[in-house]
Image 1 (cartoon, rainbow, N blue to C red):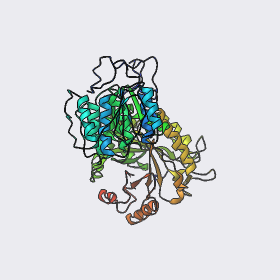
Image 2 (cartoon, helix red, strand yellow):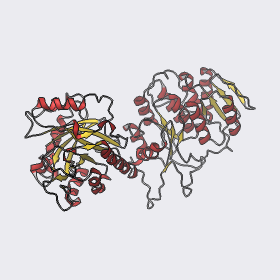
Image 3 (cartoon, one colour):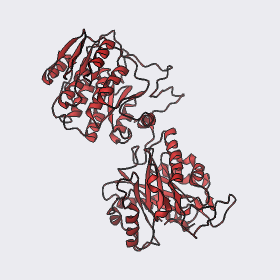
Image 4 (cartoon, rainbow, N blue to C red):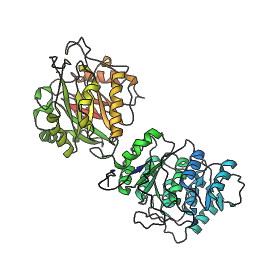
Length: 551
């Protein structure tokens, strides 16, 4: 129960005269031609592209399509005004797809994953290709030279086209990522083992080997047939590519690190992505500030361990018993105990920013709002020490969104999240301590929508939204709470008392929520729990908490 009474960064900066291209390309900043000399381009691709067919500027927006066939045609249209050659392969034959990526890169043309004659003929005509390599059972009527190749013949052709290329230096093992790295770096052809692919392994390997370039293509790393035409286009254009998690472009730390290392001017998302989501996640991948502990996604991979209270008094929680610096000193060893399962732990402050009051106050809301100046020193100390801050709201008779807006200045910071405490959300005829407050999912979702907007508009990492609960009645229609990818929503069981009773409450709150899209938290009370749960006991809970606080 809550207290009784929260590489390089690309920035569009006029002073630095630097432009970031994400879904747009300002005419004031022309894309450098493929013939210009730049140390940013390290890909070693040798192609047969006609010198008169210059590399076109990168697409002005994301390239979106739902199927490998449609995406490959869309990428060809967006990435090539002309090409000497193109490659046709099957999206379901991974062995031939593995070499087809490398062949398209070496030949300097697109990789098409459709066997539709009309589509192939239209693209061959538009590009004015002279050579078509078929690694699939397809028919195409064209004046171009058509070569049907086995996998072995395609490997030989790549080696001929890449004369003088270096062997693949980053030996990541046989398989999908090795083929993609060979395509991007211009290494000798590699094949074999493509059936074994993995989102984590492949994205990490490609991220480690991706050449530096001012243009990076963001390809779907979960499905080879969606990644292949994108990587092939990037490599054929002499550019680079990263494999991303299509559920969230920001999710994989190795990809985030690679994006920051490369620091491209242009990022082209190409895949089966949602356009609105890509519009803000791609800039975040490149330039959003990271969370304490690194990365752009809150969970999994970290656990927050917090002291709870108000800086003005120790009566509302342990946080108010000492200074911000002393609080961190006390938290560090406690947080270490909660990392026994190998999860990174982050010391945190949960600060009661608006305190439930027995008096109506000047605004008649029965809530005392802390000033910005009172909270700022704690938030600044937290920023300097890698500490996460959660601002807790006890709104009384007003609504959560009204109070949250008071602290927007702080919520625009990457290390500050928000907590809503329904126990202290009163109706217009209620007062504190006579009943337990309650809030409906509709009101929570107004905060969700607003806070998610702050994350998007301010180019922030994922932000924590913590919801306190120890009775089911505290949050009505809980299953309707929105959990957009901008936020990490956590429901914290903050009941107090004998440990068996707390276990029972946790079980009731979490029952039947296996498919829930939020995560769970646990709260310890130094004076009111009997006994106080140990770190080992909390880490044995199912579901496992990602947020643990002490009052």
